[in-house]
Amino acid sequence: MPSIGVKLYSVFFKFMLKHRLQSRLQAPENDAVGGSGGTFGVTSRPAEETAAAANPLFTDGVATKDVHIDPVTSVSVRVFLPETCLNFPDAKSKSGVALLDQNRSLIRRYSHGSSDNSAVSGTNVVIVKNVDSSLRRSSYGCSVDDANLKSENGTYRGYNPVGRGSRRLPVMLQFHGGGFVSGSNDSVANDFFCRRIARLCDVIVLAVGYRLAPENKYPSAFEDGLKVLHWLAKQANLAECTKSLGSSKGAGVDLRRSEGNWHVADAFGASMVEPWLAAHGDPSRCVLLGVSCGANIADYVARKAIEAGKLLDPVKVVAQVLMYPFFIGSVPTPSEIKLSNSYFYDKAMCILAWKLFLPEEEFSLDHPAANPLVSGRGGPPLKRMPPTLTVVAEHDWMRDRAIAYSEELRKVNVDAPVLEYKDAVHEFATLDMLLKTPQAQACAEDIAIWVKKFISLRGHEFSY
Image (cartoon, rainbow, N blue to C red; front, side, top):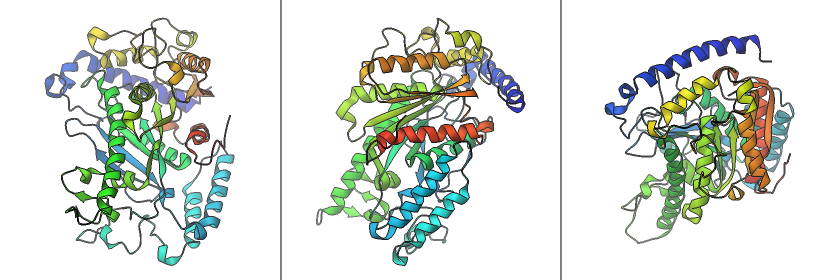
């Protein structure tokens, strides 16, 4: 059973959440942008949760920055770039990389202990000692002699790729939870979780800030998720355009340190290239990860990516992770009956969230966005879905429907394992109070082991 502290916090959490949901349900027109749900929308609620500031320095092994990707909406992404993207000459770094892998295996071995920053910083020191001093990077991840990283007043602006010998990492799109009505991609809890995933999976995480309800109802959040995937494809193509223009000579193109800044000043739009993704992102190895209601968005994006096919090139979704999906249906499952008043998110409050998210004329617990098993859902056949890892908690009333969806995927030969955690509650690995528990750390490590089957360039090294 959950601890006494978790039970007490759950009571307080449910009281506050119920009050917020009911107040929005009673007066949704007051919350809507411009009084009628404008398209710009909101992606966070500062009055309800604390935001973590972006930090472009590798102070804890991961640098972050915020990018507003759409001029007509509030959709944004927070980029989490792990320090492992920094590349060193093979001859100089073999011993350092070996020690890095050894230390990671030690961290993974203790699945019920939390890794600390001392282990990470230790491996960084080892690697730096094995690198020629002329190629040494500062603790902020940039070349020591790169004076361009300082502004006119001498203030350091954070990591900036130098454009040579860059290591490319897989890209993971992460969709936060919150019942479509709360949560954000830059909250303290989501920032902590994404940093952990970026380190363990060795991927660039793009935490998606999608528009919230009731300001923007369905399908806004789902379309925002797909919009970020298209933006990622555009970034990859613009990066290639930048390289082509940079290599051409005498073409009348104004290049401004394109190697260092990935910036081309011309009419092609190449100046919109995001430098971290251009230098280090490998969109051909793209993973989707959704938390709670974010899992519903991830599953939708995966379906649309299959339908798009080569139109998304070079982006390829190779796997998805659904963490305690926000699934529901009109016919209750055994867990919905037995655990309807479970910890943190009970069934009654989740139904309120669905009423806020779905348009009034479309409200149904068997809506395609809510029930993945409803007949006539449309989209591609299940057999074309990417490998799907489903994470469920023992004390979560939504668990049975998530397991049933995974079983349907396995029936058509999709790699779709289920990880069930005993004595766990909904959002046990992502909720602010539970983030530092051994169970949350073990869950992140288990996800990393499975994800690496599909993003590793050396083949399927891990398996359940």
